[in-house]
Length: 426
Image 1 (cartoon, rainbow, N blue to C red):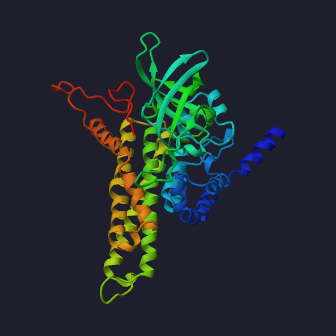
Image 2: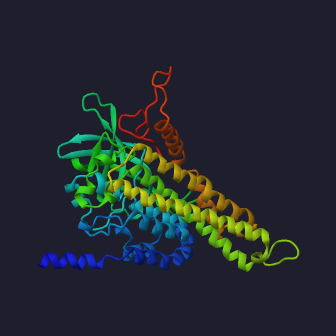
Image 3: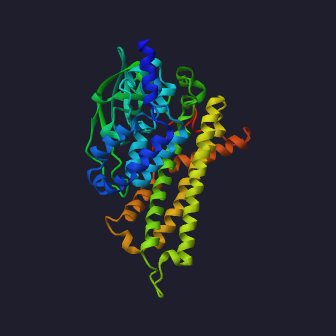
């Protein structure tokens, strides 16, 4: 009886989707105010971390059996988008801290999950490029490496990355392996912040020296880009299709979501200028009354609205495919293609339009629009651009397979086990 009462109490404590979204809206103005501080210190401050903890954002994707909320993909996207709308660095850091919760809850063994999610929160950056080695030892794996671009490292409870397995007989590097390491096994380096944008994303390097992790904290021969939804155990374990989908498309769409929030923040800035500034030439009428500014603003709003509609539609379809256990590789890379259009066309064009016509006074150092422009430029140069191109190629090959007998045609899919390039460095 006591156990049932505790379960009911825990369930009643879970906020509704709208409550979580309202918390993000309420926090957003303070994120705008802290943008300068966040950039200066290279990750968002304790005050923001405390607000996120109290709001329950770190629990959004954690399974309920471990004290989490099991929010659906649509709710998660909308909340992160709202955070990024206030501060892109903070949105990126939050997203990349909790994005990979799904990978653990979907593919890792029950015993490992119970240990990893024991606190009810899980914050772990994940990098795709193998930058270390793993040796089999009694009881687990010995990990060594220096791993770059760990977004979310400062408040992490764990870190996730990839290494190469060392052949015990030859000492040579073999297959790649994804692993999870607890916070007490690694050192966070003070080496982030000297980039063009997203200076406050907490994307520090991590050093691991002779760390011993349990055997089931790793996936020998597998990377998070090659995890097959058909092998996911999460849906049976947790009874939720949230834990039965693709890690590749979820990761790529998560970044597209932050990019959309960033562009939406820039359009917010432009809207404020529409009501407070005049056009720069006679008759110096208010921008809100000028046909050109009306067109520029309206077009940007429409582009952002379209990007949001695309992401929300994919979020629903992502869950539907998982619920029906209908994942195909073609669907996976198609979703990545939608993310490409959001980042490289819709959101990019919207932010270009408002920056081009906002006026040079708003691109001065320290101005919000200047930060947003730099942040999006950094997003635009992210390693996912390479993944977008590979996915477009693979989508074509899924739809129109090349003739196997064609001379010189020895292609193989990029994002599947056994492919020639199973791990793509980002």
